Image (cartoon, rainbow, N blue to C red; front, side, top):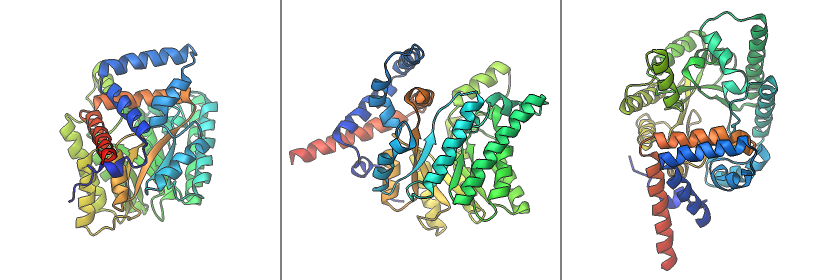
Length: 392
């Protein structure tokens, strides 16, 4: 398999010199763990104290990792990426809200994006987080099979109704719908609900996609279990495969509660688990569709190799690669340049409301060994290439 991910000319073709310099500065900061901790604390304080920091945040970290403050604000970014063959997944990235008004608002925004996307080839997927539609503690209680109060039963019926409404809209508009994975202690309830939506709306093809966080050692078994269910009941499985975004929180909780860790014993075990899930899904592509959400070059090459060996077309609609906006452009744009289906998660929302997402991104980058160093090396290579060309 030809190694394509070192081509920085393709990777950063859309970035101006100024944007490239900003990216280098940001990843330099993220590469320093103590600085990330201090910056996170200062930013949280500034936002809670309502200090006027939004302009600074918008000009630096926000504009690098987010598309804008609303869906219309994202359109120039969407259109720009699509000139290079990279699609967008508009992601309303407001986290940590607990009130019904916010859940209803998230639903309306998701429905609006579905309606918006049906007119635009640049947006083949929509997405939402389960906790965008209901309280985490409610999912947790249901997953633990605890009895609900009458008020909680009514609350859960509203969560189910939100899922139903958005999945129905996605099906009617023929837009694939990615449902993000979250903490393990709330995921069982979300999994059951998503499975019900797949039963209902994935009869002709995969419209509803769940997410498997493959740093969990039990996820491959779960995939095989629901595959058997889908075979016996006659529906398709859509699945986004990721390594996972809550590792430190998962390990801490398991330790504090004296529970077995849900996380694989090592990074290598997680990689093996991820690749095994990719192989399993491509072996059963007649009834599955996969969104390979990964910033790992080796896993991306594996998908490419398997597609080649199995004679699967590069642009087969059942296989997509996905990365986050502002990260791994060397993977996204080189895959698109070579004819594969690629979509970038493009977060958006009010600056203050999106800060929990951005802080999680920064913390995640510092905890993934080699990720930030790789970004810095690629950016430096491209800066050096441009300087050399300007002298010629």
